[in-house]
Amino acid sequence: MILLKNAVKEQNRFFAIQNELKIARDLQNSILPLVPPLIERLKISFSYDPIDSVGGDYFDFHPISDTELGVLIGDVSGHGIPAALVSAMLKIAYSTESDHAKNPGEILNKINHTLKGKMQGAFLTASALYINCAESYLLHARAGHPPLCLIRKNEDQLIESIPDGIVIGFLDTLNLKPDRIELQPGDRIIVYTDGYYEARNRNGDLFGLKNWNQLLLATKGMPIEEAKSYIKNQVKTFLGKSKFDDDLTLLIIDFD
Image 1 (cartoon, rainbow, N blue to C red):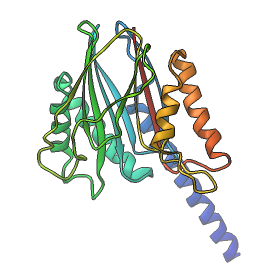
Image 2: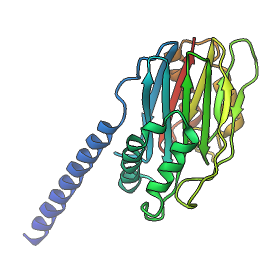
Image 3: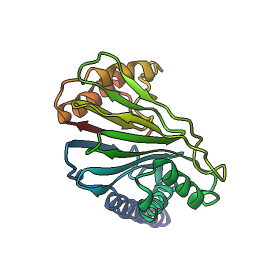
């Protein structure tokens, strides 16, 4: 009888945890974009895949006008509910500072000021973009985040934007120097989190940045949704039966 009661308690505890995780997952889904914004000359596709019920990756869009867009992508260290709580704080900080969306370096500094000392030992990498379609340029600032990749319609080489910048949460001021990139019709902009290129297969082989960059370049000329599916499927094929061990976020933006 005692064993039965203990089994019932454990089962009830399991169901309670599952219910709490579902609530957390629903809450996190509610702070992420459901559909891409409509901006003249841009086509946007995105993918978000946490390895747990909830994750530490975050992304958002801030439409400024019909031809201007702010973009943020972030990756909180760790996984699960603790990382998801920090990503929720990032959502609030980004929404609060969205008036600075035209200045990616400034908005990352503002986010750093808001979150520093409040992440319980976690840290955050992030990239912020400002895209001006009327004047055909983008600004990119990064705080320790993987490079922004640009694919040109008539070029066979991947262009990486890697402006200086330390991760969010350690220093009072980040001293960021954004890159300015002149855009050309047919350009493809890709930002992502490191879970893709840090994936390992059952043999322990790392997918790696070189393979990742070659994979992105191979999408040149593909329709945007096809490109997204191709990228994800190629990395999954490399993994085989192995599972990803990090959250995955991928944003693709085509400029026409």
